[in-house]
Image (cartoon, rainbow, N blue to C red; front, side, top):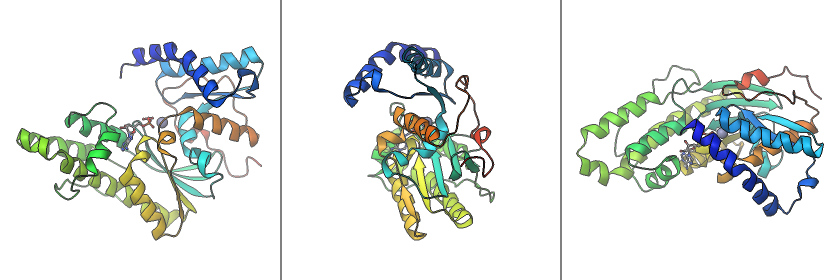
Length: 302
Ligand code: KG4
Ligand code: ZN
């Protein structure tokens, strides 16, 4: 992805997109009571276009604007369809840019239990997908091909277990690359489904094992997955099984709400507003913005 081109493309599309969204929802601009936009973390050029577009509409229509943290919006995205989630819940946030395991005790009451030490899980999917000749982002296609492959056909090394809840995918990615390079081209092509299924099984086993350990220590009422990789069919299946094992609920946003989307940004803005939590309206856009900076001690809000 070229950041400058992405920003320019946002600028070209944002107006048409807003008109289309209003038409599809059957809503007039004047009906909107609260405007929101994400200000990070992400690509600054793209964030500036979206956030300033929404901010501009809010100013023109004399309505409030709320700046939203995009990762925080993922944490609550399952509530869009499932309704209020029981607290505490665990969230596995897996996307192209983030791999985080968090405990959620309420709005702004988050504990980061683990995070990736190197690549994000979605990034690993995209890289092995690229090696199989798939277009970016490759996760959806890897998921589809892997579902018809044998997950035990190839043996890949598991990430070393250091006893923490942190993740690591770069060793697996490198092992995959060397394995492919050592195989004749026709085998790589004919065995694509088996190779991808074996990669996926290794990556997801290590992720789900960490989630299992976190459920044991945190005793949450529910497990939630969010972010683009949460659309993955095997991951959803494994987490559902895990939740059943512990007799707790599992919630996954529908696939389109797993990916970055405006629905979750608007929902969190509304939820914060309802809870009386105000943030500075002039929060600047930020490429990096650790979720920890939002955490408030227990009892800060009613
Ligand atoms: O949350 P998202 O839309 O964007 C950010 O990265 O913030 O996530 C995109 C990522 C990409 O890496 C894509 O390959 C991956 O999610 N992805 C999947 C699937 N669908 C999307 N990975 C595995 N299985 C899927 N079905
Ligand atoms: Zn995201």
